[in-house]
Image (cartoon, rainbow, N blue to C red):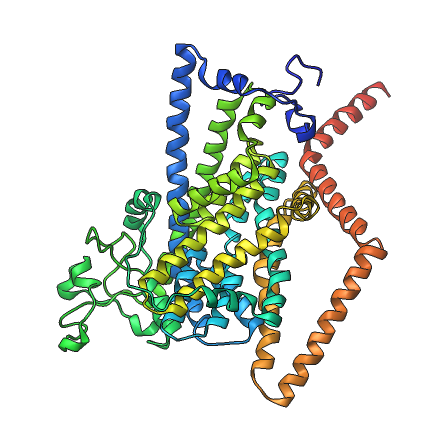
Length: 553
């Protein structure tokens, strides 16, 4: 690495081996020169590259929006049923996480939770535990996005670390603040003291990025969020109440299909208004999406949602690979000193940037998902990604606050404030003190390094962290919710068994070389896979050598 600049250049064979502490410090003059001093040909290349990057970024955002809509169609009925009742704290936490993981949007989940509290369908305390769970579930999207860089081991390691630093922060915050809230109810009392006497009705606000992206995604699929709210508030028992889809006179547009009946005026479905299910029409344009179908059954909408989910994932990974390729070409040859200086901003400024972006796009999932590829290619260091995700966590609470402003119930505002102060409390614990800050960073790096040994780590991590463990906790908590001696005793024994099992696993992991055994197993699988890939060439080589030996003998 003996270079005149004191560092490697982007695209060098060994550039990604350079650690942040090895990168020399550049001046802002050097950054400005690298950014702005170019000849006409270079400016032309920059313009074409910027247009290509914006093109793929736009369709990347469209794919995220479409994936969210498809997830709401597929998981909306289940998510609404999960959030329908008051429950115990553990179940509330798990339900919030599962509902968010199912519909791929913490903004939607928190808005529904705030609406449920405003409608007095659930208590404020239950709402607090639900938003804590929603904070965990929101990070599943960018973890999925990081898998789009599986083609390059170094990129996958950095991208997965950049994605999971968000997960680890949320999990660590819940690990401390969840039991603290159960014992002291500090979030409840803190926000209760801040409440005004009443809240005036306001208007919901939609971010400008959503206004740019939604018109295209809504032409393909538009989810009906009212279904989730109606099931959660108990207006209907299940999704069957919305089927079959009915459009007046067979005309497929918002007026004939999705306009709501005025029951006070005696209007009836099928006579004065239509009926839509999980897929609805756009109120602003009046058009119905391509996957909307008059007379559709619940199963038809599920199939449409599944097709759109596959389509969105395909589009997401294609745009991700193209975006990464464009960025790599644009940055090729640039000194890492320049890149690091340009992206190495103060942590508080990075938080402000993350907050601002999230307010604009109205989704922390989109913010972190867009930033994850930049971490993967090495433009953003993990130390900078961390405060950006913290800012995204703050920004996503704005959605809940806006939803509370639409309600005239102060309890709804209290839950929205709890969401804000929960995230602020987590930041106070895990960011200002360097030794605490290193905990989530080290955890994320360890998970990133694990992907070097096996590409199965990301999907296994997603399944276990976001679905298997929550479902296990939900099953255990449901036993105690039955309020019978038999189920309570059974639940107690199972909890003791799980605790002992975890203790035994930790003992095996730490004291009986469990970690080394797992790493050795992953290394064996990696060696076996690489051997199988080269086996045909190796066999041909051996055959040629045997033939030569046969000729000589």
